[in-house]
Length: 104
Image (tube, rainbow, N blue to C red; front, side, top):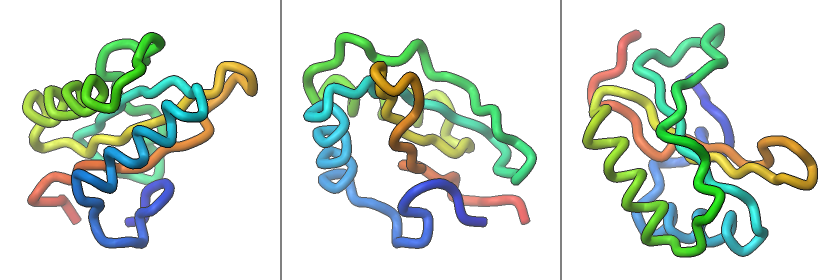
């Protein structure tokens, strides 16, 4: 099943994810991390990993939280989101981690 932006491409490498995080920060968007154990077209509500990172300025800080979320939820899908406080909404979202075994 395709999910969000970039889902039709091969999985991103860590440097590619870091570039996307930098893109979010360069646009002064607010990074957020969400996860869900089940991927389903009817499951539009994912769990938040902490609050969005309002004060994030460094890629390393966001990557550290992505790693922590993946460690705590290894069997979940994890996505990175970018929130624009001027437009009052999510402007970027893509899956950065898929579990090894996916239910069909």
